[in-house]
Length: 531
Image (cartoon, rainbow, N blue to C red; front, top):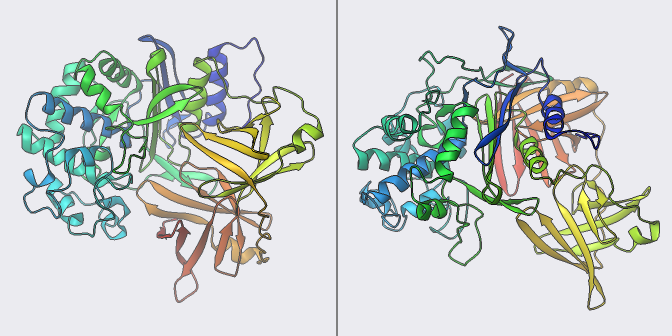
């Protein structure tokens, strides 16, 4: 997406242009609220709340928060800690006596996704129960005996199981249900009168309907019992209530400054490496400022919340389209408010000689990136990926087109080096003589074969891949990601050029397509064709 902004455009006009393009009036939409210094400076809605009834989205619309729920669970735990009812170092076995390795797994590990417990949403068998009402213990029993993925504190792996366990701990310690605890101690306390524990049966005024992509259009989201996401993703709210939430966190209304800083801390692993996650909030950087963030995705809904403590800026976007996540738009909107909007065009004009100076291969810790020159511009290509255009900011600094990712080139000991900055993630690459591997060859398939693969494939409750075709080409779009072309290796297997990944389509005996399997990063994920 590219937005041309006239210099005279106000902040409001710039943000209007951003979200109007992202969420057109006739498609599922989004609600947006941005506040600075505890005052709302932007509050609007885009797109539709209900496609079937032709109801436009409005700022008062109630949408599912998905994983932003984890913030509420985290704060509830910290509130109980401050009351002396638990400790962050309490072992899981204190609350579930027979939990495997429960003496080694602590509340701290559950809060920051370093427990090593397998996330129940990654278990295909469990997700077949998405329509089934389950108690917290029934959910816990579904994953507690699965093998650990790593030792507690050894790695960071985003984990919904940890927050199911935290919800159960809240119930054990408070002698209240999770829903009752959140309602009484947070929603009622803060006047969040339009926030709820999710329900499919309750009448909820201004509730927006959830949608997921289906080909080039949309369909109603699959049914999900709200007992399933529980303390990991069950809450619903409005942007206005989320503003009340943000102010309460900023002003330490519910927890102390000390506890808040625990939640906002970039925790480290056993070996000292950062996780970029605190307790219920991710820790990142945006336009040179520390940002505290979280996103969410669930059947029919995607969300993004960003808080910049140094500037007291809070931006929340709730969407009822889980095929068009709001995070990239929210980042751009927040950067606009910070006075550092995403660069849309070169800040300087460089000669071919100046550009060619930085071409070559750079060896980073885990990957080689190739910088090439073509038609007056530099391009970056990750090994096995596709090229991305670089926009010059200065003679030595470049930014990825439509991205906050940058390169800073220099010379060290007679070699070219590059500092690659993807927001908070920074890595250094050193010039190497490695050359790109020959591009993998693809084959052409008849249009009728390509067309047979069109459809929506569900790999997880909030993660689908939509496959479409156009002009003898085939494309795949994963939830919250851009659409990418896929290339045939054989009749059933396709590969991507943007990342090291491939997709295999699985067929029934009669030749109809029943599912696809995504192979990426050493993992396999099967997705049933649901439409």
